[in-house]
Every structure is written in structure tokens, then in C-alpha cells.
Image (cartoon, rainbow over all chains, first blue to last red; front, side, top):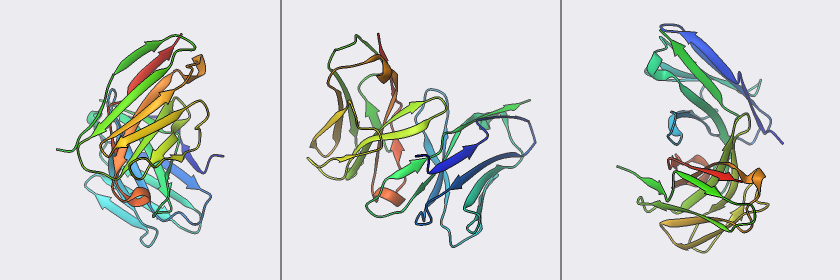
Length: 112
Length: 113
């Protein structure tokens, strides 16, 4: 059962453009939504995370937008750079003694 | 600097062999996790452990077992490897389970022939 649906599976963006990755969840009990970034040959690393009590969180060029009523959240990468080329995973959890459910991943390629 | 290390980056085993994947973390984290990563399927949780000698099944535990005898070490065991267990295996650890940042190792690429 896929509890977190992520799209697109792959994305090509020109340098300087905006990269947008979307995720949708089903379980309304989820209350923590992190994004992980994975470079080739490395394990994923936390990029940015949001709680459902805010609609947006920004860290540098990375922004999470959260729509609680639609059960959707998205990652926006402004001024995308070739160094942002990586696989991005959205995730969701209920906190406490609960595991994290990951999306299927988006492979982003930023071309010069 | 936080660190999660995995015993092998690449491993090739034969069908039916018993396989051990080792993971060590140096952050004194209570919780440790084993995932497998497959294209188009993302990260799927196999098992996790929230304390020494404690373990919980994840989403895909069939064909796997785990061992956690010491806080810093979490082992994944394939009792009888099969070709459908060819995958990238990632270990992670954290403090705070569901809301805690997970720190991942570099992964072990296992090929079962």
C-alpha cells in the first residue's frame, strides 16, 4: 500500500529554473513531512522538513509548500543548479513510536 | 561528524547463501533501520530496532531477519539469499523515531546470482 505518492519520477530542469516535486499522502494522522536528498553513491540526507501547522517553510533556495486540506506537499528548488542534481525523496510519519514512510523518489537533473 | 558505516559497498552472493550485512553508528542513537532501495519503489523499510535486542517488522520483512546485540550495531541477515533480494540496502539511525532526522549509511549493493 503506497501511502505517499511522489511525482514525477524524473525531472530535467535548466540551470536557473525552478524544480518542483509533488507528493500526496493518504493518512491524515501524519504530522511530520521531511524531504531527503541523495547523491549518487551516497545515502539519503535530510534536506528540509515541515509540520502541518505551517503552510510553507523556506531554507535558502529550497521551499516546502504544504496543503493540509488537499493532503499534498511539494518541494520547490529555486534557481536550480547542476549541483542540485540528485534523487529527492519525500516522506511522512506520525511521530512518536512510528516509522517513516518514503515516496518513490524523483531523479532531478539540472542541465547547464 | 555523525557517521553510519556499512560493512561492504558491493557484495555478490549465490542463491541459497546466508548473507550478513553489518551496520555501525557512532552517534549513540537508540533507533536503527534497514531499508532496501529499488528503482521506482523508493525506500522500503525491512526492519527497525528501537533498543538493544528489540526489533520490529517493517513493510517487507519476509526473507530477512535482524540482530541487535549492541546499541551501535544492527545486522541484517538473509537466511537463504534469492535473486529477488538483489538490491541496494541502506542502514539508518536516529533519535526520536518518527520525527527524528535519519542518518543513512552509504549503502550496500547486493547482487544475488
